[in-house]
Picture 1 (cartoon, rainbow over the protein chains, first blue to last red):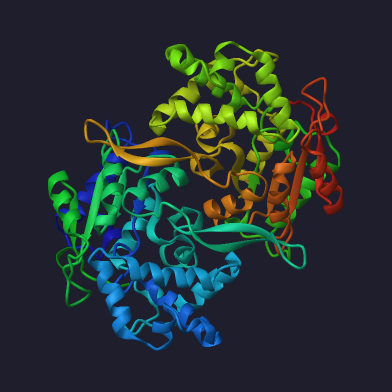
Picture 2: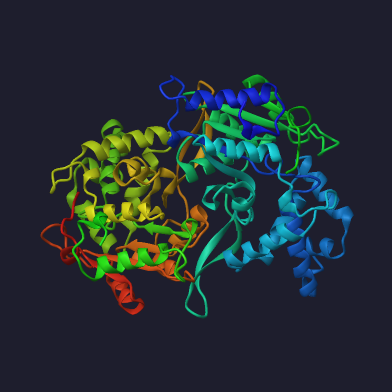
Length: 311
Length: 311
């Protein structure tokens, strides 16, 4: 067993990972895959870091919306500014609960509020704000900055794959540029290897004549989730992954796409079954668990397969 | 002078390149740029390979449209199928001439015909067809397969930058997936580092239940040209280039974007002034030549700066 997976308990999941890596990296073996084709794609929220009680990016969004509402009273008579400014937890909690049940309307109103207040902001200014948030704002339960809430065994897995010649990409249903602010620091993944959802951008020359890229408020379609993930992966990488890791129904298509590799492939589904050290939930994962059983994907039990959860 | 730029004549352009690379790679110098930030973006058509008398991708498009018209008589009563099937050089020549003069309507009809016949094709099947075309179809004037029509000094420059820790990307107004079929073979640039225009894609499971990515006939907006290039670069890389190379007005925004780097930056504009060994033309480059003079970009004379043109 490789020392690099030290936070993994010995068991089926760890064995499946190291067997797969050994098989695709053994020269002259019929299962050998050249380094250029060793593509691995990892979902982010719930796969590489915490996603409960709210996506971390939504926490950042609430802060940005709150700042805007504090500065501009005229925003406060409509949602989502009203709820955020008044700390209306009933509205916000219902938005999150509805989303988990498959009704994303109020979450879309939140996201629209966010893209509205960030319209015209340069990509550098957005990144600086995100970096400040992830480095300084603390999670209410764990009392550490959000960027520390990565899953230690998964980060070890990323590094283990990299050491074995894999190119490891993040492919997040959440915001690509949000993750780019910290991906190099927390995962050792270059920002060019982060795929995700995004607004669209415009070229603009500022008052000093310097070329800038600024955010629009329009969300690029499709978002990088569900059946949108494989097209995003193709666009960014141009090769089919031979390994993919996810944790929710939004990852099913990506995992199936990796499964279509002509040679060996590996699919991991992280199962949130550890109420004590993290959060136990199957909401939004029911279908993925069914497909995993049918397709033979490796289901990783946070409770049973991980010695440690957080880094 | 570095041996790797052996096809470059000694002179201002070669000196500007090697001075720039020395300055950004010298440790402890105030102009040092860490490897992660050494991003270079290269236009493709007319910068890395031949673009006359027609874009090479248009030659491939004509073949694909011709094949479809040969197989399906019902297509032949409308453009572009009619002109291609009847080898109506008047219509085709006018389309190209109009495009060069700024009227792209007939070229758009050609492109629409192409995306129509490729609708539903998997990305792997498209790539195989492009690879066959670029490896076997010959350029009428130079009598070699199209993939051999790269500019030797520019390919040397790509390798020289890579050896100096640069990450070199292609960013083409033409088709991203078209270039990906040969980018590793002819430039040593991984396909994940090719940025370009594209159709959109859909996820589909085939009759065997295998996940596939297939082409739609819709062209993704904006295309990767003019003011669309910097947003494409941001999306794919997430960092501002410190060096960019182009040859036409469609590259002005990309070159200006690199020029906005806070530290040193280098902009190259390849000037097609060698009627004997290549083609001499300023059409579509007039504005870029003006901006180059104003901004101090390095104008590379194919005639004066290159010992050899083709590899």
